[in-house]
Length: 279
Image (cartoon, rainbow, N blue to C red):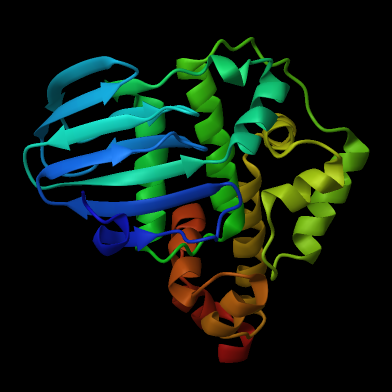
């Protein structure tokens, strides 16, 4: 049986509350998984191969291609075998997060079922975005991971549970102002989705949905925009790009540059050249 620890190339560690992600490479082989205490989502990353799967007294076999997903639900043992070297993104999602999302969306989490080698575009997109974040050294911080966990839970419930439509709505103006003010005041710190949700007295998933409904943008994306705008202001006022990146909470100058170019089409260097202090 492969040793997950020895074959892990990238890992989120304990950076994300309720979500663990690992990019793992294997030679051809087999694996037995004990009954799961978390929801597991395995997203195939490597070359196509043939996959054998056994769970709940049922056996299946078929081609397994990049982007295909295997879901293992709570309490489900599983045995799998594959015929060539491969790699995958292994995601573990805490039941508490799924329960929070289920409460907000009217879903019964005990109705979630596992699956064998299925293509799920929504889950696939989230997974590959997360893989790129791991490869970059997780520069977006815990808020990104916690938002991803809530979105993964929603996709899991939507695709494998019985979900009722979540009522549309938004945060009250009082709560929205409180949350936005905190994001501006604490932008240099590590801001978590759980912390923001606590300010609103909501579950993390419900808060994220209502924030997006109110602002038209996810909490993490809004925080990035706040940081970019403040970094631009500081650079124009004479701060160096590295100083600005550190002051507003970016993990590195490169991370700041990436978001600044994407949002405004400029680089810190160009802004620095326009600073009155450099005239």
